[in-house]
Image (tube, rainbow, N blue to C red; front, side, top):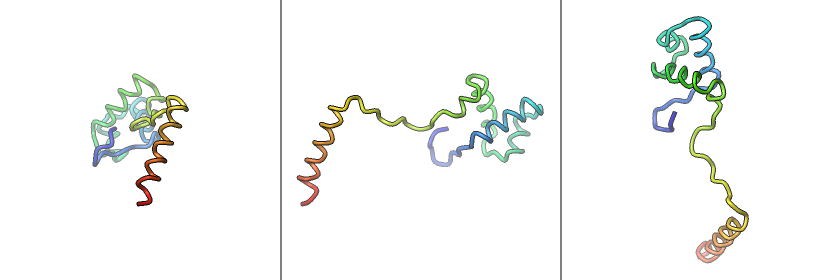
Length: 93
């Protein structure tokens, strides 16, 4: 799920319970949606597809934009020195 306003994030436990209800108890997506008090009726179908493609590990992926990785220490040091110089020059005025 994206971070759009109004979108809900569900814990992995809820997703796995939906999968269990579908496969072990033979519940329909509509029944699971009501039983788990889910906001979006299509959410269960999405989770089932994700589970079929990736298994349980598909639910443990990080969400959002990944952190920037430092490409090399010299470039990071240069950037920090420039930032410090700018703060000294414009920060105390």
